[in-house]
Length: 234
Image: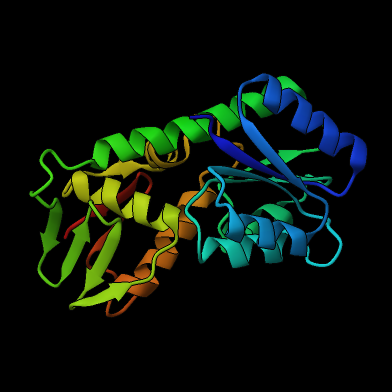
């Protein structure tokens, strides 16, 4: 079955160009011309990936991303006309997975799309249960990672994590006690072709600490190894 991509772009020529090239690659493509239409279409038929322009009528790309991230786990690649660091930071905060700055080559865009979809597939395979009846869980005192449900529980309550927060936490937990560099974490969770820098890791670790640690300023679970990276202590 063809993977479904939602293109959200108000510029007609670019929207049609993206649609044409993605269909040529075998994807099933739907297109929206403004933010409200994008939200409605994504809710009606959840896509496997979203290409999302930032500057949109009705609702801008940041608001669309914020709304859909609460409901969908599909990768979101944001398209921006500016290479402004502020755009990238705000995009991270609302849950974007990757960025492309206009103008971009179609080859690069298709490579980013393929990479994000491949990461989703690999993640599903990695966390798939070996047997239907055997749930996969990782337990650390009052913290539980349910790899079947992709859910995290702290002291018995569901912990609301964004997709990348969850992936980062799982990867750190799988390497409990081992110091991992920012570059290792960036490649493992975001992929080697992610356009953001190591600050992305720091931001997500900070968010995780705010949700996991009793005292985020003095973490005992997600420990900073000065000059190197981070270590998960459980």
